[in-house]
Amino acid sequence: MKAYRLLTEEDTSAFCHKVTEALNKGWALHGSPSYAFDATTGKMRCAQAVVKEAEGDYSPEVKLGQL
Image 1 (cartoon, one colour):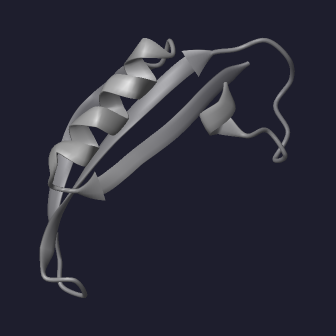
Image 2: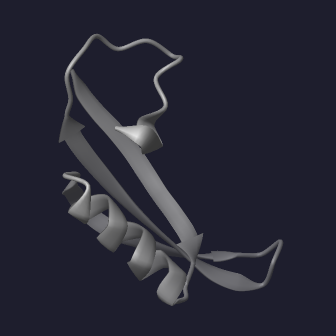
């Protein structure tokens, strides 16, 4: 199956660490990162899509972060 995740985080080093961790677990970047202002919190947020080929069949119960 092909798995997809959208990683999001405030614009801090935590976002870079989250993406780096995913890359080191075999995920690949998919598209360009996004950057937007969150009016609720007053902070900038980042997003990056990642994809990964994984064994098995997809179901909504799959824990994508554990692939």
